[in-house]
Length: 346
Ligand SMILES: *Cc1c(COP(=O)(O)O)cnc(C)c1O
Image (tube, rainbow, N blue to C red; front, top):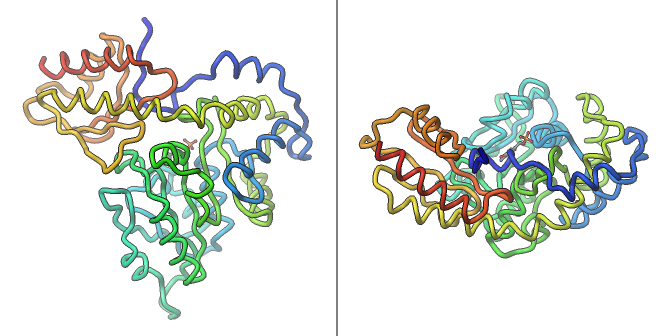
């Protein structure tokens, strides 16, 4: 059976063109910085985001961890959202490995942190306090519905950071989705950030890898720490070859995923038994909660959907998240809608 896989955009397998580019990639030892394909990818990523340099890393989690380790010393504090991936879903790496103290602030329903709450969270000089070094934003904000944070908001937080001698790191796992939805260039969107991580392995369809972007000095330090963490890969140009296709071709087609997510949203909104999460702007995710009218358990829904050729995954006690991506076409959206309407009325 050919499944429509809506569990995540991480399930995207490489395209035939990617596989061909991977097979033919020129490679070298990247720890010697000798891999021409990785060097090309790093140059292109830095250029597209308007920063001096970038680093290919095995995962988004490692990219974020490196950023926190470079910006903060042990005992320093990083301000971040209480629904952020760094706070919730990276195994507490920055605390465990960097001794970095997270200061979570409430993510608003539009994904933002309130500027006043950020201001109030910045520690004063006092022997009792930690030293605040860093603000982390997530764009798009996944748990709040894949909602993009606007360029104006990013600028406001950037200014607040500079006024207080703090760095701003953006977990931009899906920053190209944000830029596409907001219809701004990714360069403008991340201009206020000192560092940005984005994933090649999600909506951009590459099999593996993320990019960390920032100043030359920042990236040099991150490269050192990447080696320390065991992320110094050798002939990884085979992976970077797919990443180059991501940057060339996949960054410009994300609107299609957003249109399909909107179709899913509109279709599910008609269905009884579901309460749709309505973020101010949709990207490639649709979150919804089940009402008490739905009698099936989460696992039963997953199983029944699978029988109908659609893979879904839950995101909370009565909550589902559906994600559109390159391998979900219009027919897939229709199939998923049909199946979901059937299953929730079982
Ligand atoms: C997926 C994700 C990451 C981490 O990426 P991995 O490659 O899975 O480690 C970081 N932040 C957000 C918002 C993500 O969705």
